[in-house]
Amino acid sequence: MEMKKINSGKLRAIGYDARARLLQVQLDDGSTLQYSGIGEGLWQRLSSSGAAWSFYRDNIEEEFTAKRVSGSAPATKNSLDELFGKS
Image (tube, rainbow, N blue to C red; front, side, top):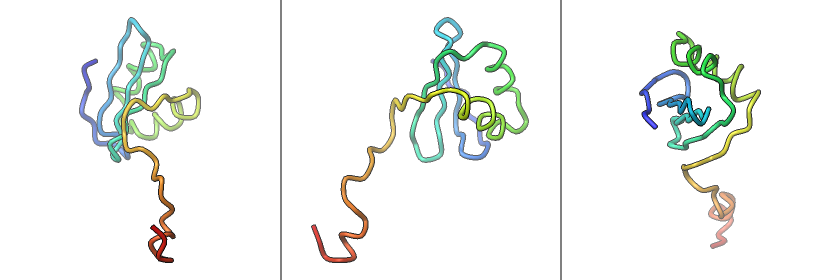
């Protein structure tokens, strides 16, 4: 899938596969999320929006379920452990 670089809020890149109706977004923390069932009209509005981050949050993030396809794994260590000397 071809990704379009974007710098809007936390969005860094967006891409769309029309045949699979699949939207992929890359966030500023390096994680990549996929959303299925995205119509081409919604993709067109996102990709041409002057406020893509707001559009994404209002119309995609809140309406569709994301599948994480890459990014940092959640921390397995409690950050307070270092403070209290646990390893």
